[in-house]
Image (cartoon, rainbow, N blue to C red; front, top):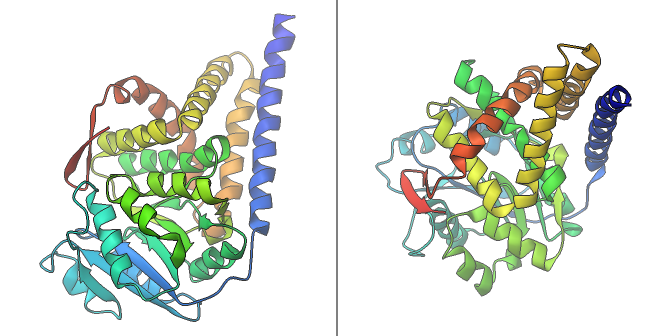
Length: 338
């Protein structure tokens, strides 16, 4: 009886992973007909490894009418000479809030000068396919806000970058088990979303996507537009602290998703150990990899993050007890109490 039960577990796990894959494929049907002049606001600090290509990707969108606004802390920032080579607006962050994070301060400053009837927030370390803005904006006819998580693409292949690439894919798992949330690197709103209440709430928080997710869910539904998926380009030097910050954010604002992932990780570890006795137990890990390959195939860079996602499961499980003891996080050079 025990052996039959153990064999049933990987079968059930495979079925659940297949179900998740099918649900993600269904997300490709999300669309709409919303259009209008869009303001794409990008907070930036320092020099991202792929900055010029990322800027060009924003300027080469097939969307008919939009502007790109980069918000810097100082015109002396090392990124400014590069930005000035291109047809983008460069705005210095203003003191629009005292309790908020530097990123929110930059977003609110950009919002102040944005001309668009559609507000889109992005990240400077992200490369956007030409259809990104179009696909992200159109479903606003059906949702209060739209978003999509990015797919990882390390600037060069190192051990730290390999693990981060696998870790990054967990953003999709959080969407699946914790409910849709807004990712700060790719989210769109109608301009009238940003009323006095929203600006007031942002002005006293450090987490932009967490705050906006809460308010958006109070007002309606968030559309997860997987067709708009961009690439996160990175070269990680501080993997552990970066990982802890991501985990703390999910733990604080998507507790159900965090616990669900830990449960999944424990089962995967269980299957890995039992696979030494029977190969049937390795099949959920193989299905997990296939799921990720299907998810990222459109980006042209699916294999490495998908393989790395298995390694990252156990890395995350090992890091969890140390992470939950954290009282502060370091983000963009500033320290925030969690």
